[in-house]
Length: 91
Image (tube, rainbow, N blue to C red; front, side, top):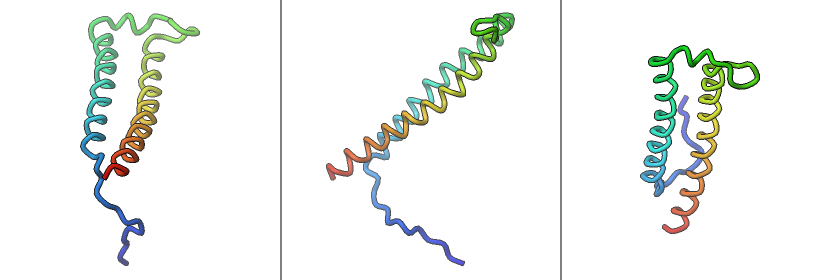
């Protein structure tokens, strides 16, 4: 059975800017993740320090990375939608 898109898609005029935004957010996240890895490699005893409600730095930083990825996904979606709307109106 042949499956086809029901939605007609056109040219994405914002594709280049969305790609740049995605790469920028990737590097921001990577830089923060490198901090997590660097602490684990150079001072692993720091990961055992209790910092928030009896939780260790490793737990707080790890969950922080997960939540940061989710928040950055929402930010990326919002900014891409804004770019698409702006650039599609201009063309």
